[in-house]
Length: 442
Image 1 (cartoon, rainbow, N blue to C red):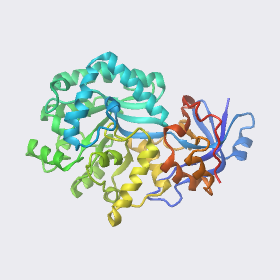
Image 2 (cartoon, rainbow, N blue to C red; image 1 turned 90 degrees about the vertical axis):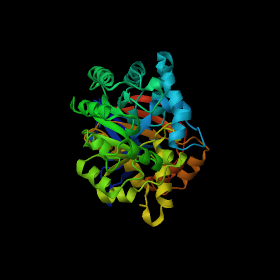
Image 3 (cartoon, rainbow, N blue to C red; image 1 turned 90 degrees about the horizontal axis):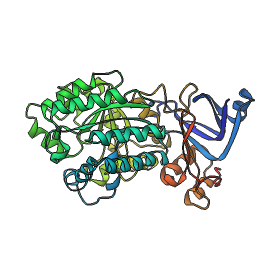
Image 4 (cartoon, one colour; image 1 turned 45 degrees about the vertical axis):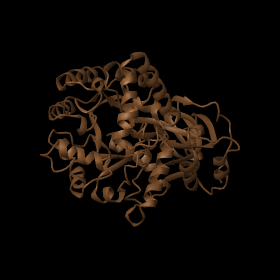
């Protein structure tokens, strides 16, 4: 049976950084799906005519967008969101690492995992690259929660063998064994993939980074994710710990950790040569503007990344990030580029939608599967509906088109405006609070 969702529809099947017609919108639009796959998108009448026996869901007061893709977020840190007044290394020492150590308790870890996964779905995130836990059972808890929820997630055991709390460290050989155990049990199971996850070079010896390189090549489709050039203090510390390296990126390159399935978070303080090498390797960067601002890490050089040919997508980076909303993260990205002035790269709604959806799909190697609503792709989408009487509702009433309304969504829409979320056509989240609420566009 074909299902047709009638709504205002917007997606970016093309890259707005290279195409002037990247954004595709349908004021009275529809998306039809069958067997978990999109079979049609376009004006409602055309879609309905092409599928006359389809079951129609009338969502005309909502805006339908592709499911959001979060390319960097820490599951163990959801309970330390809002720990203010610290820069990265002190924030880790005083706030994040003590909380992450609590996940040694399997019951506590399971509770955090459930909260985190519910939070992703409630914010419209259907796909995520998740920085996991240092503990095997806590990582199992995340994978189990993701499997139950039906989300599309890549994650893995976080590996460190120095510089953290002793309880978060593991010898290189043991880290290899535990990672392989998880990888063989979970990689490719349902919508789950494994991501090799050295925390960052500061907390990894040469031996452990070498082990991570072995793990990254162990199975097809395995990702690698870590941190890079987040703060100047961190960059200086890496230089002290790895005197043989010309720059931070080389500490990963030497061990085969820079390639098409590598996603580096932050890269705020990137050298031109590092950008050129990232681009040549096909590696990607997760831009985390709210975290960069919250910790005072710096202003992300988006223009330099784009001009160098480095793929960039967005990550919320909870818990230094300020929430799980990719719409909110898009607004922060907009703010940062406006504040950069002549060095910035001005962003419009099409750029923000691309960065929050299709760019992330590309970064995670899923461009043929998710990220936009082209027929043949998985029916992963979000219905955004403002609460009646809300500021968002008022802003949408003043919008002349769906394209205009996107700016209002990124500025104002958050968790309370997410009405329904589907992955492969199946509902993974539905909000009774917004069901039936109205908020007309134009």
